[in-house]
Image (cartoon, rainbow over all chains, first blue to last red; front, side):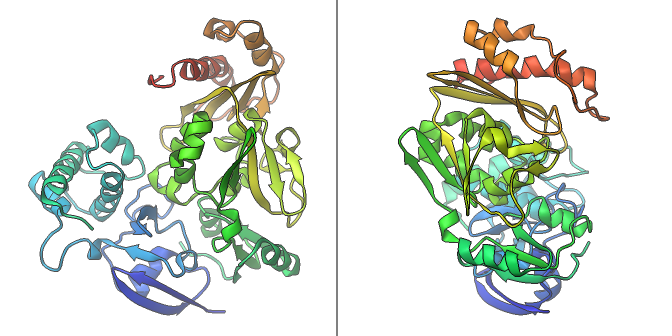
Length: 161
Length: 274
């Protein structure tokens, strides 16, 4: 029996009729075609599916779409301002904060949550904050560099999401 | 992975949730879903009806009453970690919540969900037992000492719903866990609390369910120093868990160390303990 699910995604109201067991990540990817949110492990380990719900980062493979009824969801597609990259994305580019890039959308969404909580996080706080995100390429150093730089650019440039 | 089909309900009140559960063939409450959704994906949990508690405002309150702090069952871990009232009155509980799972789990997982699930390696049960809490359900109040029964088993009756947990405010308290590096669950975790009438020590991760370690409580009561617990033996304690990450001998060894480090953290709350 399908249910009606509605939410705001990247500022736009969306409404779909889906099976009750539809995961949020499948709702985002399959129903809305926003494939920037990735499925890495599908078991809540890797964080590639991280999105923001009402301003807090969560793993979209670990919740039902129905659970975010009427909530506001931000995915990686909503982070940049049109063609212009968000400052944090620019920092990932500058610091070579990615290799294959598969984990990057989740890293960015989690980093925004870390910076949202503390605009000047230490390297230790960044590393601890990334506890739920796995990267199999970089060894994390450049990711931490990128978040540190991104936080600095956001403090100076006033870039916000 | 995909979740099997079920009938989804979004309850608007505790009364409605309990009624829906009563009417369901095989119902299940959905709190934050940080365990349940994964187990549904693995087909380990199959239910005819899922009753989502996410829309029930009365489960999302935090309040202080006398020497207690009552936290609604749908309060997320990150909220317990960051709410000024909790930080002020029971910093040991806020600290425990700040170390559960990872950032994403803390933003979604709930107090009631964790306590009802009663995972043997979960953190919250140690605080519930260590802080002499009362589990408030839709129909009654259950003392923490009577609540945790066995592996994933609690005193909750079929369909009974946790509304809130009422924690007793201690003079001081702290939690220390040997964190499993992959899952963040406790291999062994100890919650130590000091009340005017004595110490309470609750240990999680070591046995099928959380338990009070009376010998450690007595030792601290006699001499409230880290040395008092450092040499405690665990000989009288049975059913210690053993797995590939941490065998029984090692878990026994970790128990007094976890208590000592919790005590260290309690004595010097601003210092990092490791």
